[in-house]
Length: 508
Image 1 (tube, one colour):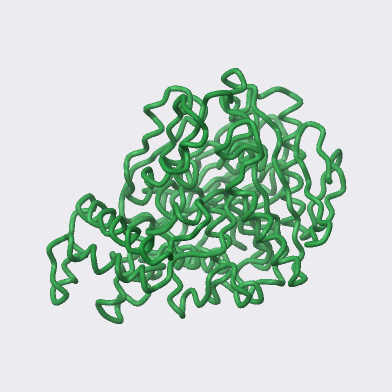
Image 2 (spheres, rainbow, N blue to C red):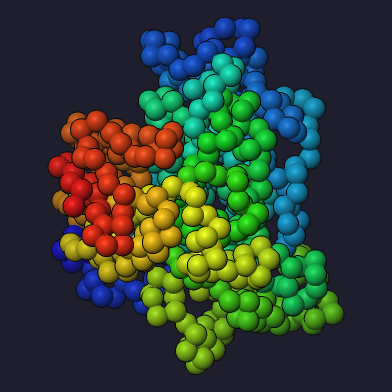
């Protein structure tokens, strides 16, 4: 990756690659934060030739939810449902159950993504080629989820894997990256995969609690949306062949930050049973003292007084977003003056649009002892890529937070497995390296599908199958293992070992 750097917001969104010195990435990143039977679904996902066919028959693919029936499609032995409403919400209010429907609802296409700033990565031909994003259609009615399952009618009790997308708490979606497609995981590993969209940036994390009790949760709505989605999974996933008592949450970058935060939320307790944090370990989020200031300054920037603050619900999104960004700039300056801005550059980048410790929804920071105690019974995988944003060498931003999170939780006797993804891509003359996001196609067993990022060589497709088996075996049993991979020992603060994932993987 000689001479090429990546400027990322925390996730797969808002990336710019330019030729410059590696050390420039951190300050710039702060600025960017921006077929079958007619009698119903077939049993399981066989490997017959008919699996190459597409069945979009409503009768053959209808499944039942608490709010109405949905129809999807079947391909490659997998039933797929997209854009299912798991909730509805008014702006700055907690999510509620969606309106029920009486007719079978077509759920064959992805739903709206949360409004967000334009993706700057399209301006760079190389990264646009490597990622080939699906930015979707933006809309505030974005509380939708997607499901991939081998069967909806066999009474299966399959492990459920709920993916939380990257982009910090600011951008991204559950459909932005082709790697997130759950077909291969569902068909090849007999699991149910769920991805979802939730509120982000000013819509999901603007703390307006200073303007009345009705806004008490406004600073954490993006996280309570995810809790609402997990509640939907608990109540409905058995109708899609999944086991609601065996749910794994996993996420990368900002998605890993969301996993870290969920483990600190009492309302999420019992809704998931295993967790994976990929390049997203965080120990601190916003303090209410400062998040409330952002809310107050945003209202002021919009020319509203405290008495008519409710008018913020009707402000056009772009005006709202821009006002919030100006408010964040003011508060960041104040935090610097107070010495309150995190010394860790990654956590400092997130400051502004992220969850807040409000004493109720999120009582403590994710790394506080109380948060660790709340979720210490959750088996956990934690890791990073070799390069992240620092081409050609171990990244100094993400890894220390991952090691700290692993050490703190292992010290509390939590089952923890630590990894480092060392495999480097041959694409674009090797300039991508083992960058941030590179492990995602391997985790989803989509190495061939994402050959514009991975190259798609047979030996790397095989490695992807091993890595995805590690993740799915963990989802099934709480212990990651795969044929052809070394035994993955639990991490311990004293002499803890790390699984280094490459063509020749080693635990050392």
